[in-house]
Length: 499
Image (cartoon, rainbow, N blue to C red; front, side):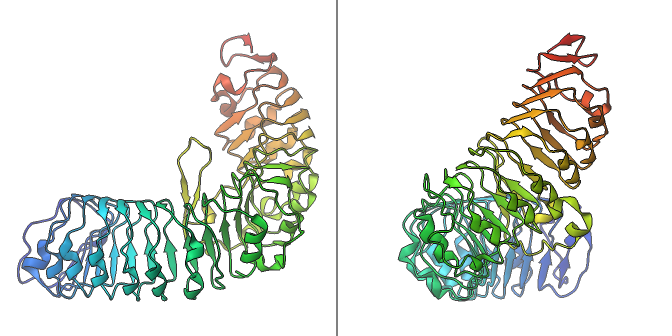
């Protein structure tokens, strides 16, 4: 289905349902055209000329553009208004706040701008407010707390500013609050979030301080919030026994990670699945108390200043499949125990893990100059081991061939020596292999040509020698993947020459 919606609907029509290109005509209390390719303007004439009895308007996932014109306020029975994932812009029409029966406003992923009007507090029946990924600015309405029936507030990825209104704590029915990636200021410690006893998901990826206790909380993201005193914060979070996702990246800058001293009741994090302290510049060895969080699946401790060796207990996590220890000061040899992670060794084990608990999107920035990647489910998250930019030495253990479910292996910029293990070719699902900037020697194993899913390979700046093995996959890589190996012969890939 494509083209603009008709500007006239016969008066005898009572219901229009065009969702997914199926047409029906009965009582016009619902108008649903979601998931098509309609363009043009949102037809607000529906409320003016067709029927004031419409309860649902859904224009989501189309190509509607321009402003939303007035008229929605004439739908005196309207309960649900959805127009997310379009190309809409401008400010919201003021008369939308006259539709006091509204229970849901869902307008994500557009280009709306301007303030969220104070008039929104007229919508006292509102339970869902989704305005994320737009360009809304200004502060939240001071009397936001009058919307006491709200269960979901999703305003992330906008340009909202100022401090949070204290009245927000009157929204005691809140289950999910996401205000991340805005420009809020102030301290959360000024607000008693313990009043929101039903809150299960909280995301404040912004500049905030922390002091609250939420026993029902399962998702907490406070990245770049200028948090300090990591020991104190961890002790507070030990009381959040329902926590499954904890993201505290870019906080506690330069502090020492407590290694057990001063941490009370680590068992409080017994249900944690995702943990990130990325970019905190934390010092000290990897803390032993992490070994007690047995349900961990994703661990990101990258871009810190951790020292010591890779602990052998990392191989004991039954559900861990994504480890990022890159860009630290870790030394010593790579322990063979890490090559026994059940989730990377056994398909039977991996199939038994349920990833449905991820109730909020998980945002990952692969590099400082890269865009954020959004994962709505960990079933799409890559099984990976990132150990790049450290000082790990010794041989790459041959036991690494046991990690048959691994998609990404980054060992670049370390002090590895010896040969590239021939059995690394057992990693048939491998998509990314980076061994560059080490001291590896010998030939590139011909068996690497059997890695049919390999889309990125880099073995540059080592001491490799001999010819590059012939094979479809290896022939597809640029010469930069092999440069910096003086004794490596590139024939006939890039002309007969020595790099």
